[in-house]
Image (cartoon, rainbow, N blue to C red; front, side):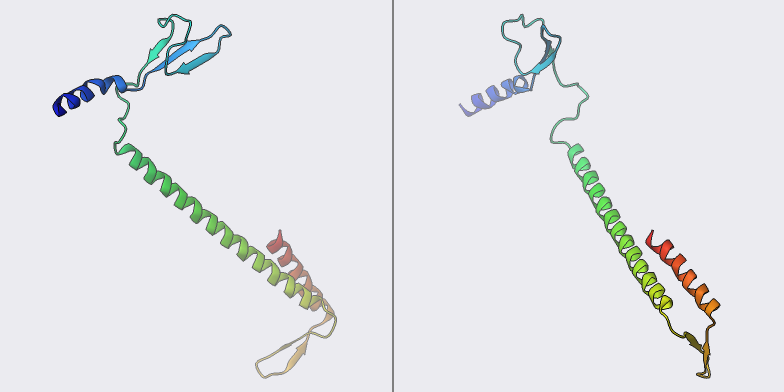
Length: 143
């Protein structure tokens, strides 16, 4: 009895393969269905089957596709993380340049200290040049 059931299942397996019918209605629209159209001659509907060289389900092809998909996901997330780090670095550089510009633009006497500890005060022209240089750095960093 068991052998008879197995033989019947094996005999019906090719018939269980998916069949799709393609047909065109009166309005010119193409339809794809599992059964031939009702009320029409089934000979008018073209029976379509899977191509002979199509990969069989359950093969290693889906595993390869899954691996490639995961690799693309990893690459995309790494690229997003790198872009986020670069954006954060640009923002930090911009904030730092603005702070330097604000400090250089304040009123008062600016000076530098040499290796002996003596102060050397900047002239107004030197200070204006430093402020202008800091403005250029802000434009470069923040645009």
